[in-house]
Length: 280
Image (cartoon, rainbow, N blue to C red; front, side):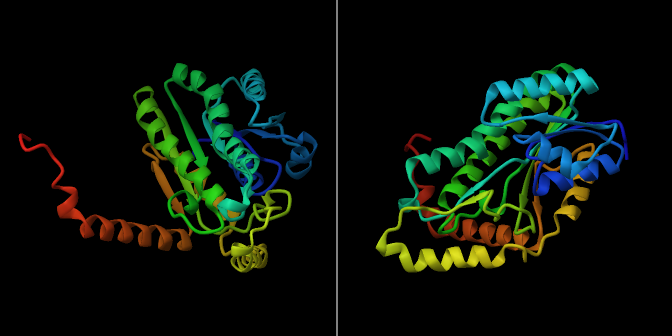
């Protein structure tokens, strides 16, 4: 494995970002580890001559530009961008406030866009680079009680799929990562927000859903350290996957989605194909 890449990782102070940063450092890469709390990032990653810790609130475009500038001043380039920082607003759509929705989208969609916008001029200039965005199986499969989170991840994936076509001519690769349940800190209080508003019609289902998420926290089947090492393999591929489904549970969900889409296509195929002008 080539040991001369510069990795720029968002949300490196907790959860999966820590594992990705540690794996990249252990493999000999140079790492720009970012987070809103640089003391926390430094504490979890320790000292390393190949490590640069930089303050970054991904919802702030000026922060993104400053962080990229600091990375280039220290290491000269950015080869791999990992859009990892994210949060989770749980709850039924009607129980979420407009502010909840805006914050969910600001962190999970606009944030990665801010950082990528700051990095792309450098990658275009170098005619190389790899943009990896951590999505979720929730970016492919919608479920109840996670409508805001799914909306953010669906949007992230639509943007990333389009970006693939836009930047491929410049030698820049893109990968969407769709993990299933991994034992990260996403469901911890610092990353998960439950609705304050309650609506009687949703109360019973809401209580069951919240209990499920709280009970699975710390018991998720996926190992984030293994995912981080797998990302190193993917980042070293000449033709990395445009979408990588991570975890057996995620694969099961994706296969179910594919089968469901095929059923929906077939159910109304005749009607769908009857809509052209007569002269076509």
